[in-house]
Amino acid sequence: MKRLLTIATTILFIIAGCAGCKKSGITNDGVITVDVTASYPKKELILQDFMDVEYVALETNDEFVCQDLVRDVTGSMIILRNRSQDGNIFIFDRSGRAIKRINRYGQGGEEYTVYTGIVLDEDRGEIFVNDRPSRRILVYDLDGNFKRVIRHDDSINVEYMYNFDRDHLIGNNSWQKVDRKVPFAIISKADGSLRGNIQIQAKDDINMRAEFEDERYGSYYYAPDMYKGLIPYIESWILVEQSSDTVYRYRPDHTLTPFIVRTPPVSMDTRIFLLPSMFTDRYYFMDVVKIESELGRDLFPATHLMYDKEEDALFEYTVYNDDYTDNRPVEINRSNPVNGEIAAYISIQAPDLIEDYENGKLRGRLAEIAAGLDGESNPVIMLLKYKK
Image (cartoon, helix red, strand yellow):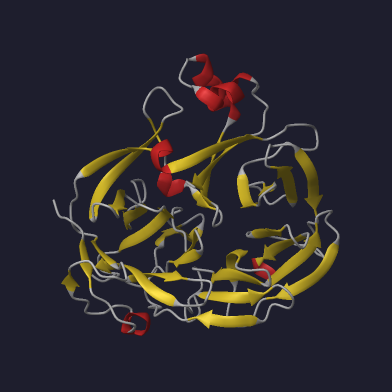
C-alpha cells in the first residue's frame, strides 16, 4: 500500500505538462501525484456525510414522457433531453413540475440535427443547444423560439459546454478529433468568438479507443464512457485531456494551475489512463482505466480511487447511499457533472425504485417518492450538491 505523495510545482507545469516532476512533501499549491500502477488501501464512505442529496421526481404526462439525460440545472429549472436523437428538450422546475417541451429538430438553418451539450441561461432566458456535426450552437428562448446561431471557431469543435459567466460558455474540443492543439476554449454567447484558448500540452498519437475490424461492420471502436473532459468544481473547472499527464484547474480569473499529476507518464504501450469524475471539498474521485484490446471481455477495467485531502492519502473507495437499507453503492464514476452548485447527478429508473420500495429497501424521502410512482413514471433525478 502506498500513501499519496505530493509534489513541488512551478508555473512551468502549465507549459511542460509536468514532465520530470519531483516527488516531495505537500505544497501550498495542493498539487498531488497519483501512481496509476500502485495499490492503495480500501475506504468506505456514506454519500450523505459529504454531499447534500436532493431527489427530484419528474412529472409524467402525455407530453412529458422523457429519458434521463440532465443537461443543466439552475436555481429553479432542470433541463433534460432523451438518449435517442428525437429532438425533444424538456424543462422542469426544481420540484419536478413539467414546464415546457421544445423540439426544433430538423435540417433548417434554425434547427439542430444532433444535440450534445445544452446550456440554460436562466437570467437571460436563453437555451444554447450544441449541434456538433454542423459546428453550430443554436440559441432559443425558453419557449423554443429561435434567436441566433453561433458558429464554432475553426480551432475547436465543441463537444460539451457549460456556463462560464454571464457572457461566455466554456467548452471542450471533441476528444475524437486528431488535432488536440486546442482542447478547451472560452466562447462568447453573443457571436461565438473565443475569449481565449486554454493551452494544455497534448499528444496527438495517444487516444483511449479500443479499435476493431469486423467483416460485417468494418472498422469500429469503443471508448470508456466514464471519461469527462470538463468538470465543474465549485467556482472553477477541472480540465482533463486524455493524452496529458496533468489534470488542471481553471479559475474564473483565467488562471490555469496543475491540480493532479499522474505517474508514470501516459503511453500507448501501457494504455492506462487517469480519469477524474467528481470533486468535493475533501474528496477527489477518479478512475484508473486500462484499455484492453480483446473484444468479449471487459474492455475498460477500472480501479476506483479517491484522494482524501484531510488525510493526504489515496484509497480505493466504495460510497454507499444511506437512503437504501442494503448498503447500496453509488457509482460516482458514472455520475454526470452539472455546475458549481451541484457536483453531479445520477438518474434512477422508476421500476427499480418501485421494486426496492416493495422489498423494503428504501427509507426517508426516497421511500416517499417511490410510494407515488408507477411503472410508466419518468426517472427520479438524484442531485449531489456541495454541502453548505
